[in-house]
Length: 479
Image (cartoon, rainbow, N blue to C red; front, side):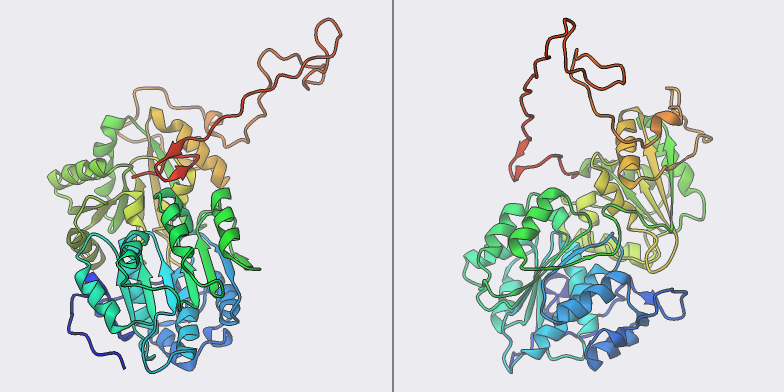
């Protein structure tokens, strides 16, 4: 049997015999008594009675679409390729079958047989809380490892033995190289937030880790969006997977009210303070594109008497935990975050999401506004758009196929004229014509030149993709 641990620093190690955590853990389930058209219950998914008891004790009885489509398939041992929007309940969709599958093959001694790989520290900790909440009636051990803290307590827990490991790629590779972690006995591998792994430059680390996994294993692969590079990664890891897509790729939640305020960049802090004066903004996440930008926003809000904190990669882990705890408890009204740090923020009652800076990658917009309108609640997403960001707005509206409601009447309108409504209409891109090429009467490219001779085709040099330290990518990730 695994010896009990004397380490109580749960924020550093997150190791437990699936005990009930001390703080409330939020999930994207449907709460008891809520209006739902989906009639399926958790009892119909094939889960163990002890897991069902834990789910019921958490106050939920109806699974979300991603859960009732994924859980039965995963319990049968099949690979799963899951694509669902942020806030759809992906975490429980893989945590519940993972607990059951590992429990069914567990022995007296803990042995690492389940691996969950996730991109950020906050998301890793949230997954660890999920395992604790839903596995509290099972005799299983799990731990969470991530960078930014000492590895000594983590190594001590791993050496005592665990059944399930939740890890970020960098720290896992480090401990594998030290000989602390072996993946030889892994039976179930879960890759969560795969698209964010790509954005953060972890794709090579992921490939190094998966190369050490046994060939015979079950793999669950989840991503909020499914660009081509992620689909190629999935094809290399999965065997005859069951495809689960409960929403269109890059779709937004229907219960989120989306609007845009055109303004100038220097006026954004004033506009933000103006909006936060409305009592309806009782719990707000503000997104900034950069770490330093997040700190500037917090300083401006603090001067205005608004309780705010920043969370980004430059913050120490303890500072990030304090900011998140303060936001969840209501001591902090506004959490200012970068996109990477925001993964793992799992709070049901976020009233507003404010895009202080519009993201230059439109898929990121979907991730951001998914922080609100969780667990059947409604939410509001507001975007500030300066002159340089207007092309980003068009890309977002084209991706989501939705027009953001324009709010033109406010005290901080831009110096430049507001764009025409038609200028921001998310039309499909027109196919470009070759420069100087002739056209026929019907508008199609002509096949002859001005003299009536066959026109020569010009072979254009293909564009090369920008190369970054993490490989070839078509867009730079937000920091």
